[in-house]
Length: 245
Image (cartoon, rainbow, N blue to C red; front, top):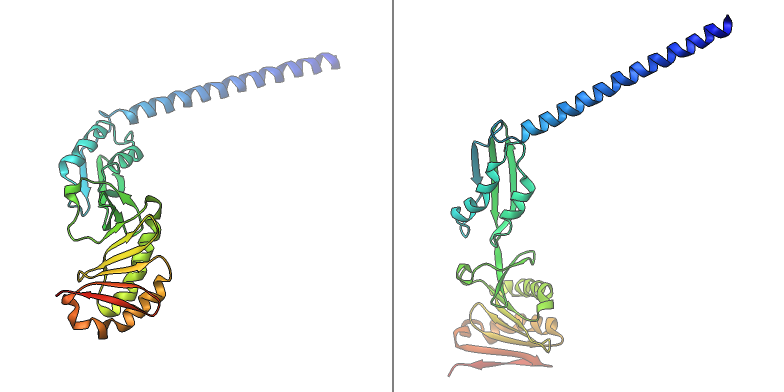
């Protein structure tokens, strides 16, 4: 009798485990169906439509038509189905567009902040450079006027940007700056100052030469700068100045 009772007990436990497994399985299936239904519902643009798009930012070289052409296809998605990263990436393909932020505001508003790139230099007459050395290629007719220019080998972009910044620091006491900086294929430096004077630096010892130039400039050129055409710093013990007749 004891064995039969034990056997019955085992059988009954087995039935309880099967029932619990069925219950858990049913619950899992129900949750899965619920999640699928919720995902479909949330992704349905008729259930949660995007009703308002706000574009903010300070930009002058990007037209509203350009922005609208890129933004509009994304607005057919639902509020929750909007691919913010893809929209952000698409907007950043416009040459003048820098960082973009896309933000959803429940229940149906999308806020887009567009920041325009700020160029500080023209690179090889074909591109613009930001202060961080990032090059971009907008249409030539959108280039800002009177930007300083760098001209040199393609692999010297960062080096030339840094050199131009250092030269401007040296020239600051003279209230001068570099309007154009050229690095030849032979790695010789030439610059044009913002007062129109061309300065030949050469390939070597350009920093001692520049320090000497800054030190004697007020006495040698100074108030006669309008008559000066060019300065050659490649001499070991001084430099030459070419004057207008």
